[in-house]
Length: 270
Image (tube, rainbow, N blue to C red; front, side):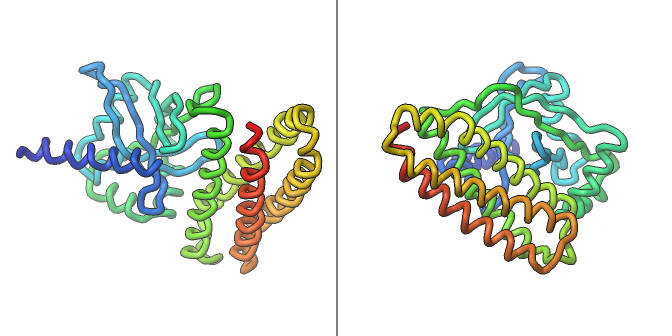
């Protein structure tokens, strides 16, 4: 078997493992990026680590510090319309190559989070690219509303576990810019999700199922309590202290209990 065939087989095995496990790989953040071949016009899928960055995610074209940019990078430069798979959701996105000062600032932040990126850069004379993947408008491809809600909840559970691990590993003295962004991105996502439920989902269910009135009132109360915990976490992120990990634990406990209760109460009615 040639080296190229061996590498292709390894990649295919990783992609199959990713899909078979709904994107859960080594307690880390991975996604599948499908680009259109710049020359062939055929779809090309790569598995990449990524970083949250507000309403976008970041990937790095390190190629292990090799002398050439990876194929997926050349593809998205030629055609920036790509497809993202998280294991739980699939959605179209637009790839934006970061340039000049923005690229340097973001890359420095990622090196702070993982010095391996700096080691890769030191091995090559090319400037390792950083690419932002911006989701296109519209809901991600999923299934029924109930299935979508469960997948959203699973995403939150996973991200909470990752953030707790990162906070524990870093310690308050080493809390870097990227970890702050990871936390703030989660806070924003939770704010958005709970606002949507409070404004649209809960009133609709109250009209259709009056018997859920007490449960919906409890869920709304929990939304309010979690909002307070999120505000406290955001304040701590601006001035890290030994209270950060306990606050993450308080948020995790409250949110997991809320998600479990919401699924038990609402899923039968969705």
